Amino acid sequence: MGRMRAYASLLAIVLCLAPALAHAATYRVGPSAAADFRQLTELPALGPGDLVEVEGGADYNGGVIFDIDSDGTVAMPVVIRGLVAGGVARPRIVGGANNTIELQGDHYVLENLDVSGGARRCVYHHANDITVRDSVVHDCPRQGILGADNDSGSLTLERVEVHHCGEGTQNHQIYMATDEVAYPGSVFRMQHCWIHDANGGNNVKSRAERNEIYSNWLEGAYYHELELIGPDPSGGIDEDEAREDSDVVGNVLVKRGSNERFSVVRFGGDGTGQSQGRYRFAFNTVIVAPGSGAAVFRLFTGLESVEMHSNVFAMRGGGGVNLLREVEAVWVRGRLVSGTNNWVSTGSTNVPTEWTGTLMGADPGLVEIDALATLDPSPASMSSAVVDNGLEPPPAFATAPFPSPLDAPTTSPLHAPGSLPRALVGTIDRGAYEFGTPSPAVDAGVVPGTDGGVIADTDAGPGFDGGPGFDGGPGFDGGPGFDGGPNFDGGPNFDAGTRVDAGRVDAGGGVTPPSDDGGCGCRTTGTRRGDGLALGALLMLALALLRRTRR
Image (cartoon, rainbow, N blue to C red; front, side):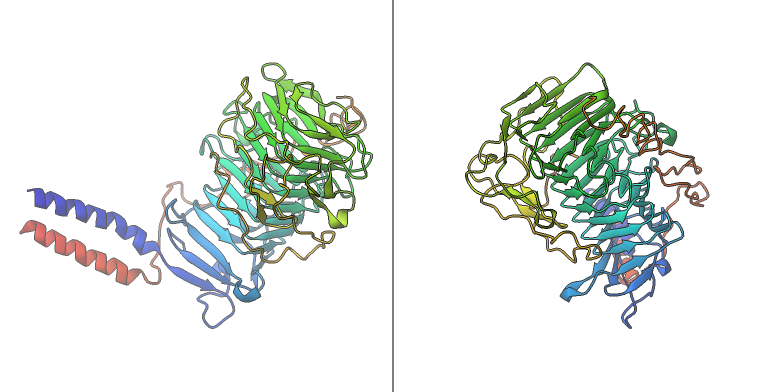
């Protein structure tokens, strides 16, 4: 009897494994004789463990949909990989009547792709557990990467470059959201990315339930470099469904371009959705434009707390920085601001009185922050004002502790996609770099269209998984904020528009036709190359076990 149970258990395991093994296949797409298909749009339904190899150095038609009948799994994601060995250029996926690539299926990894030219957006994300890495997204007339209000779960961007996307006030280079009903606890993580030279909107705007913004270089947004807010009520997610928190650690943020005297970040809301959340801003280096009176931190409508630790705030050419604007802020339970060991330039205004350990000076002692063509915001020497006086880990904000924070960065951003290892040398330094570790790459002034090439993975490990005022700045003052700029005003807010499409609502990018899946929620699969042998062997084993069990 015991032996029969053992065989029955083994048989059950085999039968459970059979579907997974039956779905794993490798497809090759490209112009060569070795390819199975010429275009990505010709692929059959994909399944767990499938690998699609896309030949580099060639162009492919956009309008690619990885649909809801082509899911991977957590253990066996579907991988779409550009073949770039030997210096071959990334495969270029271009165009599309709506989107260049649309992700409906869950558990996908996209690697080594060049994506451009979708009529609305280049990458449209409304799935769960998606990773995009080592890729470039560019020249998209609306959003470069858009996460829908509905059907969207966790997304990771890693070593991704995005440039020359966005338009006007409502379309952004990256515009992210998560569906807090369908996928509670989802995370938008962006790490080791380079986002630059927007055509309009913000560089990064997110309504996700949790944002983890780690070791990126953000520059050249028309509006904010970073805007982290709450869900859009017109998307069907109530702003009280969850609290949206954001951990922003180890980044470089540079205001430059045609609208460089604008606020660097906005936290809280934009007039359409309040986060009511907690914000943590640590070990970042912020460089504002000469003569800018706009605040670095623009606190807007509902939020709970903001804490800033071991950051560097400086102005190109010298001069004081306006730190905090909170006249539009609506505090959930009274004003909660804290901070430790920040460096700010002499003459700075609206420095929070709650900060402790603040250092002020005329020059932080960084290699180069005045000339845009040779920016290098790392410490120039041991005598730099920011060396060996950070605080790691920063103290927890007792009144509003941040959940699962990244205590301190272990990498520093490149001026390109990728990162450098940041090993601790003595006491941790303030800002995004550590003296005694490598300096960031110089991009010679950001040459449009070069796209960074294929950047080697210099990360110090797969990291950062610490968890899933009337101030001369904009607002009531000729700048955006109830005033003809973005907020109640045609800026990046009220950007819901009319966007309901039978269950798929896209955060700011128009209506997308619903998928025709008959409403059954089924996941159908087809036969794939290499399935027969593995499946046949499993069936033979199963039959043998059954015979032996009967005996």
